[in-house]
Length: 512
Image 1 (cartoon, rainbow, N blue to C red):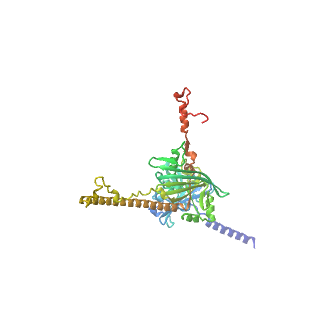
Image 2 (cartoon, one colour):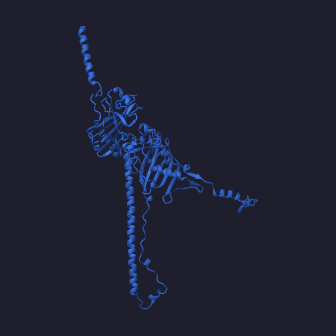
Image 3 (cartoon, one colour):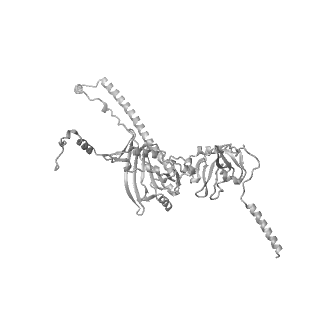
């Protein structure tokens, strides 16, 4: 083959390669020569009910990768796919987010240069490279069929105009000013769920029982610690502790803080249990777990020993007036479970709070002894209410031919009728009291079923600071006072009446 032919072949191959490279190149944002300021961004999106999913993507600098948070509605039920389809309490929040994108107006054209995207913070987070700066937040709304209704990259605030942001549409170069409210686009998991984990009323707490034990993991045995039972008197608004000593008193402030912590117990994150474990926990006393379930439990600080589900941080049982008992098993520190918003994560006092978080395993059961039993009144018998004969009439029936007078018979009939009325009223009262009690039992049992359906599939993550308020030890809430005998002796020694050295009354000699 001649050199000329070789050269021609090389030129043809190079040309084909250039064409292939051009066709296969990543699509670059299109340039927009026309001024489209003051036009609506998404003119075909006018009804928030058309939207069935919201995805918010941010760029995680720690992992150098995009981080997506998604909320979706399927068959009328809201869930969070980015958190293993945990149930979302999202209807109002989602409506606010969807409404924020409806009728959105393009403001002034700021730039048509891709090199300015970093400056205005509108780099697409789904395409950002490690180390990128100036990355925006991408918000996408879609219909139930997956059709995109709105898609926007939201960048930095405009200086001295807090209500204005720099924005860009994915796939387009132009950067606009835009008045947009970004608060509804939260990626904090707890902003999209029912955060109140137990959903109890603190005023209905009857008892709190703390069984403080730990687990010897090597020997698979329980190391028993303190057992405490606190009871709350609703009428006097005071706490009682079983086996409180004569010279001890309770620190009600710590116990009231515990009660508030139970009322305010909030979810920070969730992790789905293995499918088999969730199913087993829906059936009482069914804990025949496979290896996957056992490993899932142990990695979070839970163990099955002698058929019992145990925690290495003991168990706290919260008993309610309606018979519901919440069983709280606290586990290990939950590494990596923090609220996901960048600025909000470290905010002091936030649920995540930048501090440690802890696993919590929750179940519920029913205790009928917590419900006040019905007040069943004893029905009076007829003869019990007939007045006994007096001395004057005691011997009347001994007289020959003595008979009850018509007046006596009438009186007795009236008494019998009155007694029957009383019995009827008491029977109705007793029946109503029993029905009320039975209804309370049914309601409590139904409540337990609903709670366990909600709890069964999930390990919850809560703030460790809240855990510390709930898991009280005796030394936290019991204060020792001086014995009265010592106080009396001190008072007597300071009594002027004994200044002459006379021994106090009942002062026996050393040998007695």
